[in-house]
Length: 100
Image 1 (tube, rainbow, N blue to C red):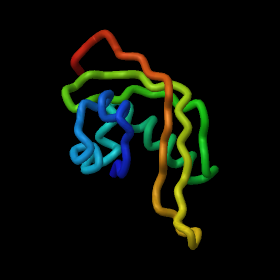
Image 2: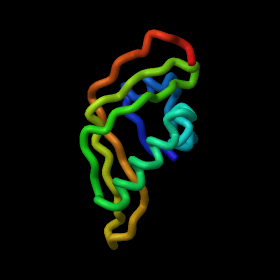
Image 3: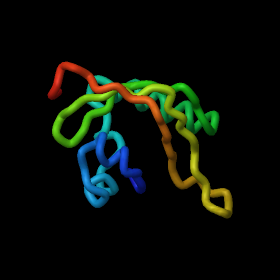
Image 4: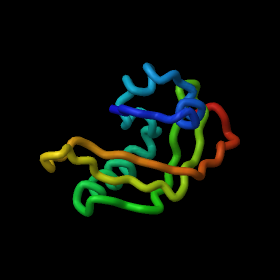
């Protein structure tokens, strides 16, 4: 589940904060990209962090955008227990063949 999204993420995903934070993160990727996304998350789990991830994401209205140079890392609570993963990206490109 997404548990945070800044203003830009809300705009890109075309959702308000409540909708974004109720969205399972796997639903932000198109089905054709799901296998790639699963591979990425497994790498992050194994290595703790991955840089330079790129992939297609889809907004609530079906608009597709390509994220680049994303960093994805593991999150741990103060006791060192794994609690999930976080991602950050600054580069994205709308895809022209809208909507999906």
